[in-house]
Structure formats: C-alpha cells, structure tokens
Image (cartoon, rainbow, N blue to C red; front, side, top):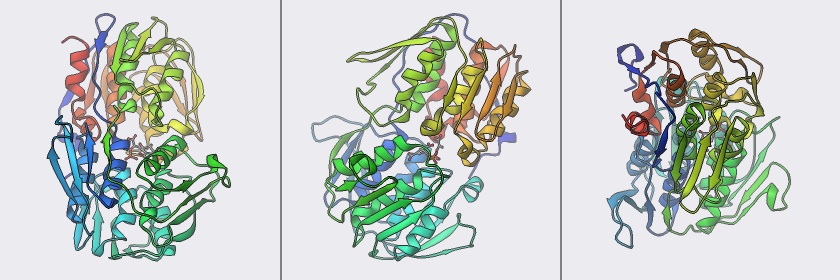
Length: 438
Ligand SMILES: O=C(O)C1=C[C@@H](OP(=O)(O)O)[C@@H](O)[C@H](O)C1
Ligand SMILES: C=C(OP(=O)(O)O)C(=O)O
C-alpha cells in the first residue's frame, strides 16, 4: 500500500559543515535491472543477473514475473560470487495479478509479456499509476493481436487476456509522453510470431538513451534489431522474431542515483568518487559528467570509477534535458544554489512522472524562498538566498534526493517521507550520511 505522506516523519536533511570527500558505492541501475529481468524471463535458457538493484521497482518486477511462472532465485553466480539472481524462464501463465506500484518500467514493459502468457493477467498499482500514460502500449498491443480489458482511459487498471502467443507485426504509436512505450514493445518483440515494427508518429520522443539501452540489451541476448541509427528509417525500430539467449550480466551502478552524490561534491566544493562508473554506457546519467562540469565541477573517468570534484563555484545552465529527463530534479536543486539563472528545457513530459515534477519542484523550491517559474516545457530558476522548511516529496524518490541536495547548503531543510527513495535507492539515507562522515 502507498504511504500516506502525512503520516510519515520528517527527515532533517544533513547540512554540510565543509567540503565532502567520499567514495560512494552506488547500487545497480533500475533501468538495466528491469530490462535484464524481462529479457531473461523471455529467454529460452536460464540466465544470471549479478549485482541487481534490489529496490521497490525491481522487486515489483521480479514478483510480477514470478506470478507469471518465471523462476527467480537468490544465488551465487557461475564463478561463485554472490549477489546474484538466477532467472529460470518457464511457460508464462495466468491467472496472475501484477502490482506495478508506481514503476513506469513495470506498468509499460509487462503488458506485452502478459500478452504472451496463457491466461488472464490483471495489472493494478498505486493511485498515481492510474494517471500515468499507458495508451501507447494498450493501443499497440490491440493492433498486434492482444485482448485487453480496461476502463477506456488508456491507463491502469487493466487485464491482459493472454492466449500464449501474439501475432505481432507493424504498429504506429505516439510515444511523446514516454519512451517506455517503445522500449516495452521492442523488449517482447522477439517473442511475437512476426516480431514487431514500431513506428513513432508523435511530435517528439523523450529519453532516447533509454531506447538505445533497450536495443543494446536486446542485441546482447541475440535479438536482431534494426534502428534509425543502424541505417533504418527515422523513428522506426524493427525486431526480428527469434529465441533469446540466457546471459550472465553484471548490472552497472545506477548513474541517475549517483546524481545526488556528485551534486554534493559540486555544492560543497568537495570530491566524490563513484566506483565502477562504466566507460561506455547508454544510461542517461552519464551525461552528468558534461552537465555538472558546465555547472562548475570537473571530472576524471579512471579505471576505478568516476572522480568528480567541485570548485566551490556553482554556475547556472541553459540546457535541453529531453534525452535525460530523469536528471531534472537534481539539476534543478543545484541550479537553485547557483550564482546565475538556469533554464531547463525539453521536459514537459515530466508532468506525468512519479508526480508532476515541474509543479512540485517549483512549489517546493519557492517555499524555501526560491524563485522558480514553470515554462511550457521546463523551468526557469533564478537563484536567491534560501531558508529552511519542509520539502514535500509527493512519493517521488527524485524529489527527496533533490531536497537533500538543497539541505547540504541550507540549514533547517526537512524532507517529508525520505523513505520514498526506496523506489530505486532504499539505502539513500545511510549512503548520504555515510558520505558526510556522520
Ligand atoms: O526506460 C526506462 O528505464 C526509463 C525511461 C524514462 O522514461 P520516460 O521516457 O517516460 O521519461 C525515464 O524517465 C525513466 O526513469 C526510466
Ligand atoms: C521517471 C522515473 O521512473 P519510472 O520508471 O517510474 O518512469 C524515474 O525514475 O525518474
């Protein structure tokens, strides 16, 4: 059940007494873990996930796949190392009930999987999940041959009446409200009888790196995928039908969850090291190297990881975040503490994330004395002296971490329901106080 924020205690965000100097081991990527679980469940042989993220979103994904008959066992990897999930694919079946919580990846990636199950699969979730767009997935699955009962709003709750197989083939969708519509159809595409050809016909498409992540991970398990980047038509992705391999995959650290720790180095003029930062990755968080450098820091990517150093100065930024929208709350928090104004653009779709993030950031920063205005597709942030107060989080993990960043520089900030960080980073409060040496 969703927490009632009014019942949850306030967490006094630690104020930094000096420059931070810390190494922070950031747990695995939500986006990679949940794709890896789906692909392993659809494979024709067992596979391993090493160092998977264990957070609300990924535990919901694992529970949902188990409900449909997939085996997911705690275990040791093939070389004897621990922290591993062994995934044993099985004939997918209903009746099953899936709780999506408020996980975009679960509510979008699993209806296509359910269409392959034998029997009905009911999807339900937190109240907010009823408001998040799902029409791209529902409409597309119907075109591809699935039977779905919903209440006609193009959203949860719904039941997918799986028949054990899906025709697949070509489909047009408008994915301007979420890249996850495209990823969802591609991930299950190899298992559709005719594969799938997804054509995006909307005006814009957010979070392109997350679609590249989907394509790369599909190819890594043996799928054939044609993309705009591999010489195909713009906005068209094609997946050929075929069996998927079970692999042994080590999950990268979650670079979007590394954001608050990097921000801490920037805000305090300190240094933070993130071990195992990948040399090459599709994660949008990799863009922080560029964005936070422009905002005043510097970084070095070594074999050990990323070393990020703040200079003591924090500069405003004018940036299009459409490809990396999930970084917006953390960038807005840093921008509120900068020495010049910022304009964050290209993120209108954030109004349909965990909460309306543009409204929430504007209200909460302004209630601490800030000067933020919403634009049609982003935020204008004019820094001014902030004061303490309650930072409301609207059951949004990234609102909680944004408030913590501000709390480093502003005394007396209290974060409502910091436990909401469990969506993707259950250890956040401990990692944060550990970083500060508390
Ligand atoms: O596919 C994914 O793993 C994600 C895609 C993005 O979604 P949107 O395209 O809906 O923004 C991102 O914001 C979300 O946190 C994770
Ligand atoms: C938008 C996010 O999550 P979801 O996967 O629920 O869309 C996020 O993590 O910032």
